[in-house]
Every structure is written in structure tokens, then in C-alpha cells.
Length: 124
Image (cartoon, rainbow, N blue to C red; front, side, top):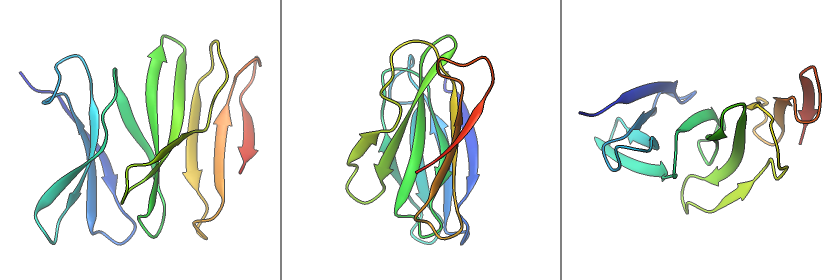
């Protein structure tokens, strides 16, 4: 009845990120499980399928993707403490994106193919 996805560990091994449709059978929400505390915190609840792309080295920020339609996903920068989010890919139309944090935690690298035949690399 419930689907779960593992997204991996934080760099320090404190958090395990996973997704589940337990809250809503039509959506996958992203959670961070705090291994030390034994608790899970909802990182992002979406309308559809959400997935963790990246977690910053200090665990303060996450990039969560949400499948908007076939051939299109959006990326959100999420503050793991407050839940505040910023849409990183505000473009309409098809496009697939992925992201990673640099080791400094202040730079975000992402790839995408919005309005392109080939994937390009970007830096924020």
C-alpha cells in the first residue's frame, strides 16, 4: 500500500533522506530522518512525485525536485529548518533538471535541457 524511495545519507551521516506516499497515495513526499533523535521531518510535500536532488554539506539546504509532467521537473531550494522554499526552475514547458552542492555549500551546480537539445551545466 505504501511506496518508499531511499535518497541517501547526509555527508555527516546524521540524516537519511527518503520519500514515501504514505500521506497521499498520489504523491511522494520527501523526509529527513534524524538518526540520532530517531525522528523524521517532512521536508517537502508536493502534489506529485518529489525527490531529493541534493543536501548541503551543513544540512541547512536541500534541493528537491518535483515531477511536473512527462519530460519536465522543477527544482526547489528548501530551507530544512523552516521549510521555506524557492523555485529554481521557473521556466514553462519541457525541461529536466538535476543539482548538486559544491563542497563549500554556497555554490549550487545544476544541469538542465530547457529549450535545448543537449544538457547544459549551470552554477548559482
